[in-house]
Image (cartoon, rainbow, N blue to C red; front, side):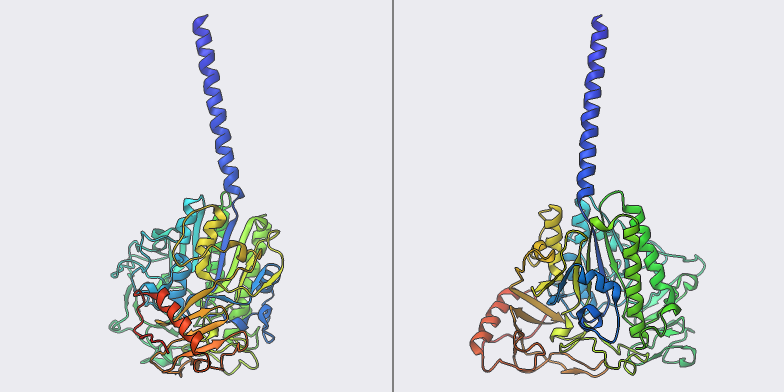
Length: 518
């Protein structure tokens, strides 16, 4: 009898422990599912004036507009830099790119510039129960400097926090022109290995410069090396013929991979960094979109990107995921029209102004270099609102950490989740902006651009750089177009901002400009 009672007690205890563990597991699962899915949709070279929700009249972006008009539309939202690699570095790490001397526009063979021990958004979210993925453009370097493209390519996205990656290494106009999935080139044949060089061509390989008769897209500047799919690129490539992408199919291929990631991840919270390549050159819209904008290939790929976003949002709705998904939409820098190819984008621009009312564009320290479309949408959580708060992509790191209950932070990233969700307008007080290693300081409505060497106009792309031998000071409250330099008449304000600028930058800038009080 004693033995039976003992066995009974053991069974009861075991059942209680099992029930408690099961309830704890269910509680953890429930808590995980209560955390929102997070998607960052990141376009490439899309300007403030390229989106109809931001005032564009000559082009229609109805799907981007739905996100903007039903969420929080920021009129003063910024990247950290007016070029691609630095802004992507700032977004993912929550650290100013000018603190890292390697954070500049990279060739396709550059080593990874994010330290594998560094904090990143995907690493922080993965620690908080998220499955993380990147689809489309990377451009933050791969490997350690000597990549063998025919073996596992590491370190890369998977080593800085992404569970899944399906990427292009750099940009569409740079070699290698292949997809890389979880560190391996897709479709590569062993008997046709890939070779890449950014210094010299491989014997017998045609180039855009020497063999223009083999091209279907003519280069304007800087794009006259290896020819892939009739398009001359930056850099030299040999081999990997069956692994090479078809440019016109890229948008559909990446969209399918984004959907696949969501399908495979929807049983727990997920984070997707959907880094689109449009409207960066070469602009190669699928035949479905050719001629749709009336503005040539640049306009057509904007229409294509908008369609992809609409298709993806409808997919989320079909999967019953939209109500618990925070969607952030923005661009990596301001616009450029002619960025290396003759593609009718200048000739067919018409009345369209990609930079909106602002001065400058890609590569520029003027406002259009970093002020970009920036929207936050969460169905049922964000009320339609236009916010004039000064916000920056660098603050997404700390803000998303705040959202999911993480204490991760960086010295540059500010926790502003309530601002991003439209609950208040507690804007940033100051923001350091960058353009190709040159920096400036935004403080409230004031922006100070210190003297910088170099041309005032990049003739090849017809964009003002913001360079000047003199200090520039603008009050955006009265002068959004930045044509009234107040450096001489507002010396007190200028000196205040210079002092603050020196305090923020310290000795960590790769910039050589000497700042002096005026």
